[in-house]
Image (cartoon, rainbow, N blue to C red; front, side, top):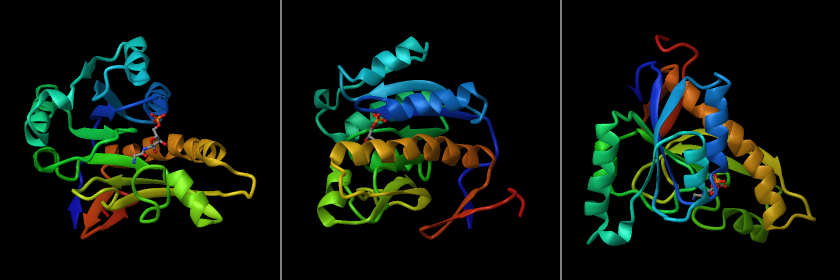
Amino acid sequence: MKQIMEARHLKLAVLASGRGSNFDAICQAIGQKDLDAEIAVLISDKPNAPVLQKAAARGIETLHINPREFPGRDSYEAVLVNELKVRNVDLVVLAGYMRLVGSVFLAAYENRVLNIHPALLPSFQGLHAQQQALDYGVRISGCTVHIVDEGMDTGPIIMQKAVPVYDTDDEDTLAERILLEEHQAYWQSLQLIAEGRIWIEGRRVVIKNHPED
Ligand code: GAR
């Protein structure tokens, strides 16, 4: 069994492509001292992502790195990893980052890239997870915080939170209900890592009561 990392004050980088409500929720948890961490940098692949303004307003350094300016994913990720390393980032948080993570990134941050997905994985991977859940007709959906591997939404699961799906739901109402849970699940998962309590065995995550147990 392998510990993700020893207990520490986490130095995070957040990667996001859009609105940034999960980014905001993590910032709030840090501000309220629920999460022992700091955000070294917010990186977006989209120049106009609202999350860039949100981070700037909080006085957090922002970077826009445009993947289209690189010949391929490896060279894009090499630059990304370099930006993380020079800031001594020890954990990468994908928060609505709509891009697959490749081998260059994962080699540099093995088991240290987290993602949140708006469904109970392994159901409804990929885009429009909430609409997929509605179309399938499930009665319960939710969110999943997981460690990122090379698949799409396939890595070891740290935490899941469930919500009911109502007959009257549309994609927006379900997404909103799930989002409330996302905003708790992400910082709670990160805090477990900060406390040194997350271990991995195969694809199973074990949460220890105490790091030495
Ligand atoms: C969140 O619902 C997150 O789970 C989802 O994008 C939204 C981002 O919202 N991520 C994915 O679908 C990744 N596959 P936010 O920008 O307000 O945090």
